[in-house]
Length: 348
Image 1 (cartoon, rainbow, N blue to C red):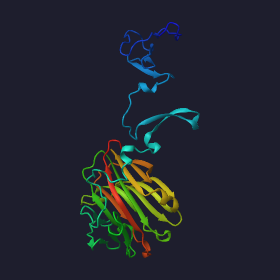
Image 2: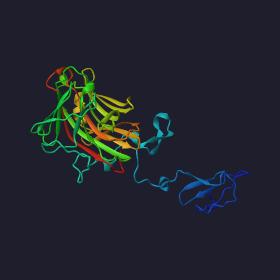
Image 3: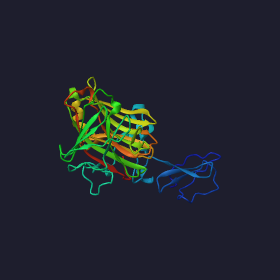
Image 4: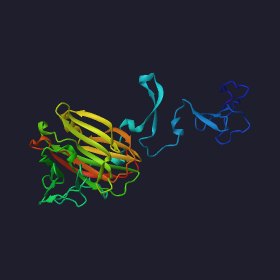
């Protein structure tokens, strides 16, 4: 420290030292002693345990003295001054900003150069042998009746048509012949996943063809689920993005976490049809340890809906295309373009 620089007055138990390089501080000075670290533009104060703490000044490039984290995660903190609270210093977590990492999202709408074993592109007119169906109420597998490119999945009170030739590169599904049953007897499409990782993402792009007056096929759901012990998804242990129609509220987008049958609503968005049609055609579920993040997006933009803790062991990705409520035709047709998985280290 230059001789002309004023120094704070030292107390009887405090020593103000000239500049000392980090690691060369004297050990004999008492707690509360202060030094100036000119190398890193910071003040260092000796603590009662003998270690030295660092404090930033208002000098330029103060932040550059911190170790840089190359791959931020949603749980990382950012310091802010809260404009709504008089500029009080607070912290926020990255996930609250609803940002998505480039490496995970930028290429999710393009066929990957190397597909993940859990990806489904629905090309051709042959339904993949890895795609299966089951009834929600009985959890029993249902074997489709195959035609040339049309499969009829028949349950007791719910039936679904599935077809890949109707729209090239898409799997189309349509519920019909509900016959007065309940949503509990709905048909689910699912695929067993390979060994899950601590961090993973499953994304789906899907649309639907319907008139507002007949879009009442219950919840259209996309989910990750545990196994029920019999090789099918456990609907009582899963994380879900669901879309439903109600004439009073139009479309409702909901993020749900289900643990041991207890349903927790993570987020709800009530959407006008026009807004939904232009904004949301893609959905993603991101697993980071035991925390799941819910996303909806379209045209390259994604909205973070929220997150929830759930200890489920992911075993399946599933899709439930609603049910034919009331037997009113024409019934909604649900189209799935792809299901894709990412295990990047830089997930959103």
